[in-house]
Length: 254
Image 1 (cartoon, rainbow, N blue to C red):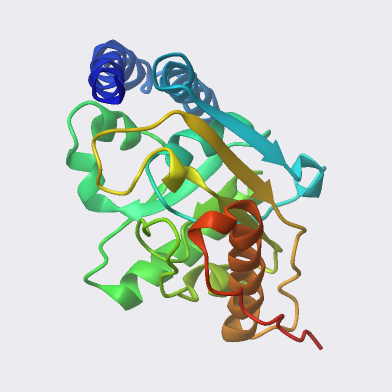
Image 2: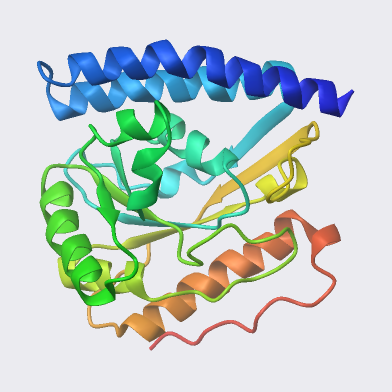
């Protein structure tokens, strides 16, 4: 049954993304970037709703009150990455436009990547680290000044359920350079949408949004250590069956 559900959902995504992407590309030349963003989020809502109806995956969200409330309050969201699910879901939950930092190879994905290339986001060449980070800072500052929140996956790639990747300091460095807080987010999507697995399972994905962490006067290493501690401790709380090892010890913040 789960195989059939997964096949049907794949067809659902393919059938809906083609016309939506072509429409987004065509209209991108005559509408504002924010309008185009919300048009594309419309397809993400279709994809996520398809996941609810077809795959039986439901989201359980907590901590929305931890998000900045002002329309011009910038932030960097640092999110646990276990599957494609959170990539689709996060823009549908957030009250402000998001700008993903992503590898430029995604721009070559038919239809989805082509439409993504018309959005005002930050695509980088990961083989050129210095230039890539300079681009992240310059574009990130501009976008956040326009009320857009930057979203990054600090582990850099999808991590199997129950495991922890290496938390890179790029997101913390951006927040410090821009003088904005970071918002840690824990996501348990791996229990329903396993990494690199075609077959998905019905169930609940917990999305927990943590309190804003100030970047003022912090080093990138210190700030990211606090983000890592919060996310990984929260993952243990949300999905204890996947984490037999105790969570990290709390990070002491001066």
